[in-house]
Image 1: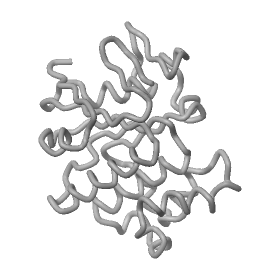
Image 2: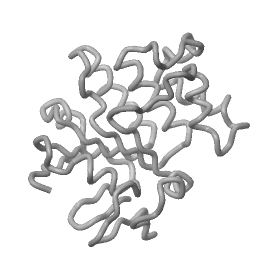
Image 3: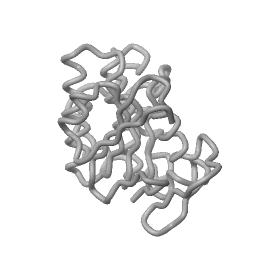
Length: 193
């Protein structure tokens, strides 16, 4: 689905990108999502060239992105965060919420707490859920386990695998190389950009 230089992900795959700090992993994801300008090479979604398209246009084409930090609206409730994910089609919220709650069952019980009051792992789950509310065909995840306890890291990896099993192509940047490579179909090592 995404092809740029020698990097690609086939539809339905879970692809990992690992490497040391400063290697360019997050920059690669931001480039794919239109947040960093690409000066050479192309990014394809299917057969369509999406190189340097704006992020809002990519969302309409089915590309979702969950940044590593600042990935929730802290003053909004969990439910309001998820409504932001369905902003392009608000009438679809109930149906999409039900599908997302199959992957993240705790959402059914916890809709009213403010996102700012959640733990890091809970925030990550809300951020991934919000991205899924857009019904992406491709989901870009930037270090979803960063800063989490080992137990919460395991939970994040279980949920990432569940997202992929639900039919979403996932490209995950991760520093936890061992755990990442356990769940992906294919991995890339990025070193020095």
